Amino acid sequence: HYEVSVRLRDADGNPLDVDGGPDLRGTGLLPLFDGVRITRTAAVARRLDERGKGGSVFSAFSGESIADEHFLGELAETLHQRSSLASQLVLSFTQTDVRGFSTPEWDSLADMRSLGFRFALSAITDLDMDFEALAEQGFAFVKLDATVFLEGLPAPSGRIPSNDVCRHLAQHGLTLVVDHIESDDQLARVFGFGVLLGQGQLFGGARPVRADVVATRA
Image (cartoon, rainbow, N blue to C red; front, side, top):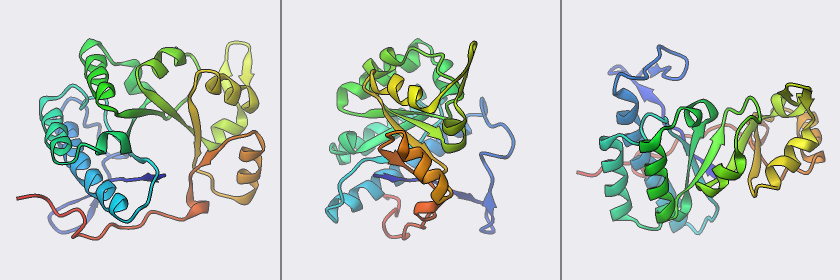
């Protein structure tokens, strides 16, 4: 599997720290960024497919975008150009964003699920969610930080140990991806609990995509 991220730069080519910078929610900028993200991710997915590389392509999106007309328009146009993207792309949303979804967002997700899209839940801090309902809505993956996973997730009675976390998610048909694995020790401990998918610097850092791959359409 692969994950595509988009990095923004200013007019002078300096990187902009969107995630760690000012809160952009409600400004209308996040759906614009995600509109670019969906087209760039689709281009990478197409190139991977052309090279015979299977697997899913993950990319993180803002919950604010999922019911935004601009983002949905970009998504529709991208899907029109390459319908197979729906079965290849996995859209990731944070637990905080998903908790804030209302009817318009869930309706959009339902429409996307009917087209074949799958979703991932990221930035998990606790298990106080209806994971069975999430699976029915098209969520197939749960991404959990390695340190959080190994320490156990908080619960009213204490902490839920790692093996119980795996069992809880698996019984609802969700695949756990443990990310930010930075050392061989973490790797051994994580996979010792039966985790199948891992991600992190230990497996190699991010690599830039060639400009010709993600060249924007006219």
